[in-house]
Length: 167
View 1 (cartoon, rainbow, N blue to C red):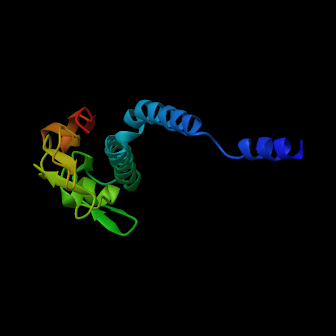
View 2: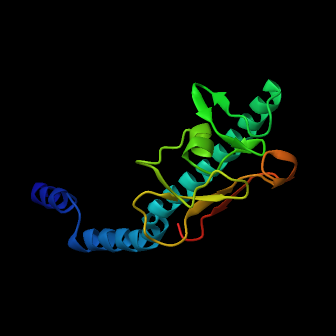
């Protein structure tokens, strides 16, 4: 009888091969369903970066405009934001490195690339993520327009439009 108790005790130790195989199969199935959900973090990160830049450009444009109005300066007068001189056209930052890039303090070396910039009303600057060559993943800032630059009335406030379809 003592021998039977020892054999029963030995049988109950550990897992059988079938139990181990079943656990591996179940984990494999769970991983197959979970993997697609976690595989595209890069796209979510790029989209979030573009949305963040969109908010920064809108805020910087409004703050620069408010500073110019508070100073009582003309529509084309430069403003100073936190030590940075921001060039203005039609009461809002220009669509270039000296305007909206300076106002929003955008890193155009490591984070975002800028293309199509200019310092006249209606000029558009396109911001893309440095190093990303996939689909359309950009923000377009278009400077304010007037019938004649820096002479009122302003016919269109600046626009900031994000396109994250290809991120």
